[in-house]
Each structure stands twice: as structure tokens, then as C-alpha cells.
Image (cartoon, rainbow, N blue to C red; front, top):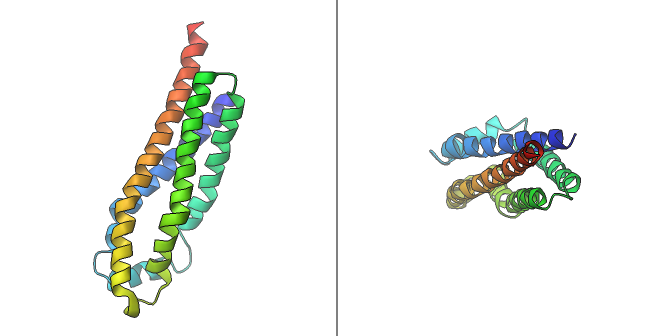
Length: 159
């Protein structure tokens, strides 16, 4: 059960991280390609579904899973530290998303285009640049979770 929780967290965190890479390399490039036309195309594409829902669902589930891993591995001080590190990096992603990305998403996808072309251009560039930081935080969290899982297996089979 303990291992399954960590594996699920690694899978979800890896998925979230892969999506941020895709967003940076594909979506954000498309949004900023030919503003204002490219923003309108993106708005039309996201008209019926908001990709932020993916993050709003999967991110908190992952946060709960890694918190559960901390609790389940509490007696193992070294493993606990890896999982706490992952938890903190994933929490940083959530904070960064709420405080940095959501305001730019609002500019990109809700503000009137005609009156805010320069604001939209700036938000698009800022979004693209900072998404690399979010990706690195995700990679760091996944790495620490894998190190914790590796430490568990090393200790288990060393005996």
C-alpha cells in the first residue's frame, strides 16, 4: 500500500510535468505566434473546456498522495525527507500557478483583445518563460519521490 501511494504520486506528478513541457513547447508558442489572431484561435479552441481543470483536479490529488506518503513513511527519516522535499516543490507549483499563471491566463483568455494587445503579448512571453520554472519544480519533485522510493527498496533488500 505504501509503495502504491508513492508510485501513484510519481505517475501523477510526471504527467503534470509532461503537460507543462507540452504547454511550453506547443501551446504557449501557438498563443504568442501571431497575436492577436493566435490568441483568438486559442480562445476559440478552449471555448468549451478549460485546460486549467486538469491542473485543478490532478494537482491536489498528487499533493494529497505525497502527503500520505510522508505520513506512511514517517518512521524512515531519510525517506521522509525526500517526500517532504517533493511535497514542498509540489506546493510551490500550486502557489506559483495561483499567484503567477492564473492572472496571466485571465489576461490571455478573458481580457478584450483590441484594447490590450501589448498586455497580452507581455503576458504570453512571461507565461512561457516562467513555465520552465514550473517544469523544473515538477522534475525536482518527481526526482525526490523516486529517490525516496529507491531508498525504500534499498533498505528493504539490504537486510
